[in-house]
Image 1 (cartoon, helix red, strand yellow):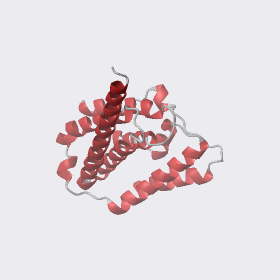
Image 2 (cartoon, helix red, strand yellow):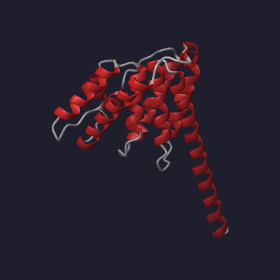
Image 3 (tube, helix red, strand yellow):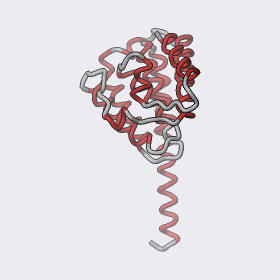
Length: 201
């Protein structure tokens, strides 16, 4: 499955013109399926790109997907604003190549193991994890989207390939993202207190 998707993505990148611009809905269409795991990976990848305002919109979509998972649903009807989120030509090509590379490596390295972590009974906890990562992506932190976005990509691949090791890597990467957010928050608070003390407030 992933080899065929990678081929379609690379073909689209190579055959597309220099002005090729794809939306989230069109990227999803290239996959040939709209499962929650695939949609999560697309939104997670796009959230790591330096596209103004994309992180805010995508974090809300990711949170909505987490809510759907909590309710036992594996799909999400994309709101018009989210589905129409469009990349420019440069980031469209980079995104297509990145997705193709990701699927090619996943086909080589991932396989069913430690499947207890992929059991349907764990969906509740992974849904909470997705929501937590969405909160981190929403926060206006410098480079704050990279670790939670990577965590969600690993989670989606682990779910697709039934690979518990990928899910554990997702948890470790996300935990690093939480640590980063707390560190930045602590520094910001300390700086604010220092400024307040300097001004006699």
